[in-house]
Image 1 (cartoon, rainbow, N blue to C red):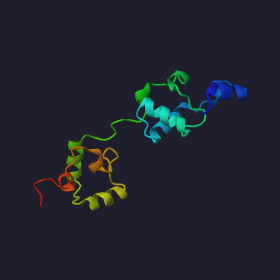
Image 2 (tube, helix red, strand yellow):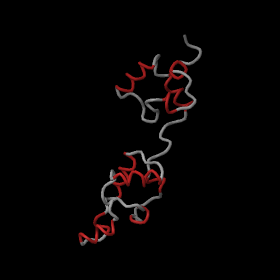
Image 3 (cartoon, rainbow, N blue to C red):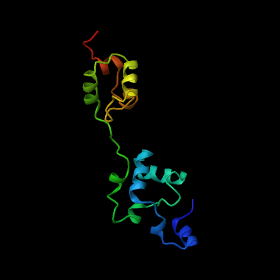
Image 4 (tube, helix red, strand yellow):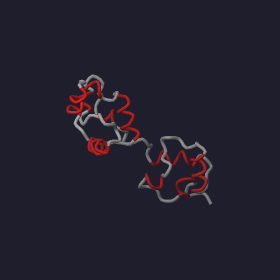
Length: 136
């Protein structure tokens, strides 16, 4: 990957003319689920953010940059386990197969993970998550 300054000099343009628009770079950070500055640098090195994505967006977009927390993908995009379980028990689903169909049909709220068994360490079983201990 070429440093933006050298590439800009070769093309006879200033740095800001080659930078991707801030909103596009921010959208890419979210698309690739970049949640830390270290992960940003790793993805940057793959070229997925574009040839002229800056190593230090906070310096290049000083008027637009809102801080790393606002720039990067949200870390906790799902509600806590208890809230998710409570909501899911109200959907009338009984099995993991029901859950998969529910998700594929687009019924799952975006704030509940498609794979709660993977994303919540508190997950015990599908019966516990979808029905509760008092059901048969």
